[in-house]
Image 1 (cartoon, one colour):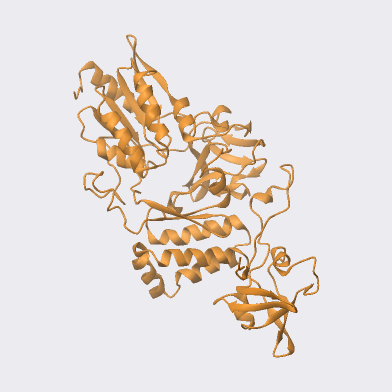
Image 2 (cartoon, one colour):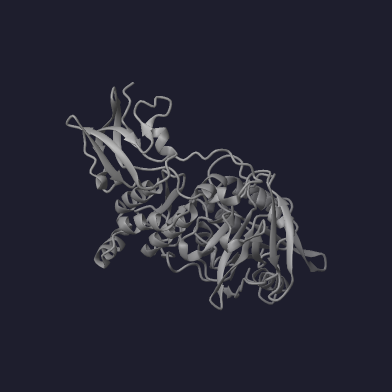
Length: 489
């Protein structure tokens, strides 16, 4: 098999570090170097087959055909350490590269880029090919700072990985398109894709109060370590393992667009964390410990959310939180639950708050709920997004359905995902936009608009202490419907 020339770049594989060691392992500084060349091994060095534009090799004056014989303290005759391995461990900084050119040795001063420059280049390449971004691209160029330059600056101006990804998210958020975000490496591995996922099951929203940035629990999966430890929606998260959360290396963006400011906590499987929090505005600081030793997934969270809410006279309202619509299993769970555990409930509160999913799953759930004869309240809030708000809008106007809560996120563009060299994923909308899903949404555009509830309820997150005004209002509405005061069927 013909081997393609290697791209000289950083491919960081940090040495194994135990959980007891420095937490900066979750947010490492730049390591390893990227030159921006393609090479092929020869008998007397590494021949440069291509110099990639905009790279540190081009800036240093390296040319196609040069033979690299020395990089810093690495020499060609150091057989036990190939050049690619040396670059994996070479911290970016001023470095002398010696090349053979036309029979002469030349020492060239270079300043290799970090690997995340490769992410910047790949993000620029992918976005530039998507027609939905053209208007924003033109505006950036008119402003004098093209996207590629902005992303490159993000790498050079942030010393740590998480800072780079956060700044890159801020930059691509300038396009003002939903489902446009960089999903960081830890989130990509531990919250997305196949296999068992181990995490706290808690997501924190950044809220600015009196110009101060503070973090509050926005959502928690049922059965998660965070919920089982007794944390509540609206609790203010102060620190993780003794480090202020705003400065914690464990803090990472959770996959939403930058303007939504949703974060989560990086954690190793079977690791025990200590979290300090405040439940009331001026209340005492409390702490809890939790161990991440149970895999979490959407369908299990749905199952564990099921309960009956008594309404008096032996009646109840059935409650179920559909965490996400990623799997058809969620649709099957809902259908079976309505026929079994919640069979005798006189009305239903279906919680749609949180993340989205797939159109195929929405269709299945929509059919199940449309065929119901009991009064149904669909719960949404400003963070209900994508498939969740599409379902609420689709069923709105059905005689037995009432949509209750806040206007949803208005983020419905179908997404595509691309792997980035540094282990992150780029999420951007399909360039066909929402054209394929418009029929499901009754030919009304929800992007930037959202689903508008029948009954509006304000949900102010800080220090909510687990109270839920949206669910409380749903119970009241359903109770009045059952009594005949607001019966819609």
